[in-house]
Image (cartoon, rainbow, N blue to C red; front, side, top):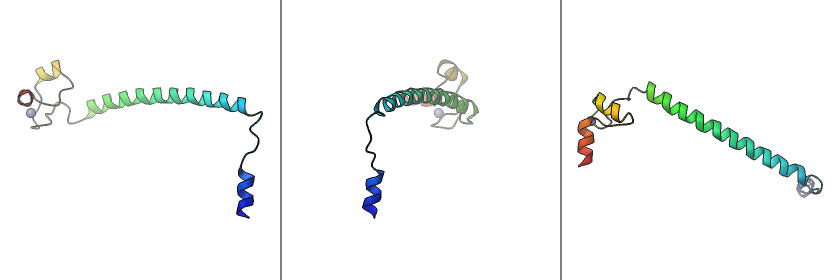
Length: 90
Ligand SMILES: [Zn+2]
């Protein structure tokens, strides 16, 4: 009984459908690339928004103090305050 069902599920006609299938695969690949592109863009926006909304922005990850404006001016990505940055350098 089970064997009979399995045998019926195996597609036997690969003939004339082959061209259509390869086209679909190509289209799918293009769509996937587009979706990935959009996802990447959304990701970048997300990261930027998170940074703005984040309470941790401008707070030193090491000592928890506010990062000096002069540091943020020159290095907005900085996660450490001036002192910790200096300590890190040694
Ligand atoms: Zn610090």
